[in-house]
Length: 435
Image 1 (cartoon, rainbow, N blue to C red):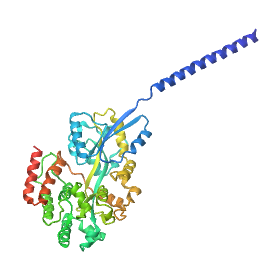
Image 2: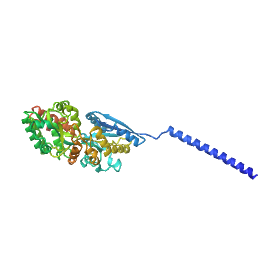
Image 3: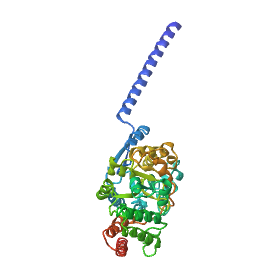
Image 4: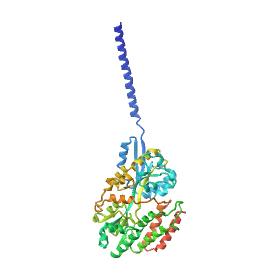
């Protein structure tokens, strides 16, 4: 009986194990079926940019490193229409992307609507510290109350580009020490231009009075507005002095009367109409594309700029409060603006990094440019980036004043209008804008 009993007990145990195994298998299959039917929720992050940021190949890399994140790029070719639409969207709170890029020239007006943007210092990754960026780049991304509105992307440190062959033909020195001396101050720069015009019997020294004046104004401690957003034209003697210097240079025939980055300015590059040009880092690509292969090696750039340095260009990534995924958007923006990604973007688009670690990279410092005679342009612009001082406060409408008021007034001077009459045009134009 005990033997039969043991046999019966063993049979029962086998049946029990079989039943349990079957139930577990069925449960596992049901669970697997449920997983297959309900995949993990995917987070879609939209990012709106303009022009070329060099991010196209970075998006798939981020998605690979962050399963469950899907990036939807929204790219506009022209910055003007993009920023006009962005301002409207910020006011109305509609159709905003999770990340919105903002160009530094349009940043002042966006900062007046900082309440519509997240504070990245609060929602961003804690390891993203201010010292990631050059101090002036980080500070420019903050609102008046200290809120960090944007992570800095690229920058536009200023150097001076010049045609070495044209200076040589005019009997002017072309060794680096002499060229740096010519470009040391605005006074020395315009004085060299006057000599150039005389020696070449009327050929232009620079392309655009407006381009020079914009660079001069941006170097001042106070620009068009004070920190109470009041226009300074009536009291800002430094600004008026800059106007007098550039219009005096126009009177001496130094300006070609062109518009930088417009069709006539590009045509001037192709026809070798002028000898020098205000040159942010990104301008090297413009010169190469527009001047053409016929003058390869004749253009040069040097780590010198009147009064030390300045910045023209660069952008920020912001996160609107309307984003459905602000934390994830801030993490993506932080990753895109990390030094490693900015070096990648630089190689793709020529956008010069603003991050300290990137500026210390041997890859950047050793970057050469065959079109500019094999010059080590990376080191040149790193040197210039470190010369940029504290950011100038810019009130709302600052960019519009440059585009719609001072640029047309200086164009009028280039076409024969008296500088004093054009200055009254500037004063009236600013008054109308800030009513």
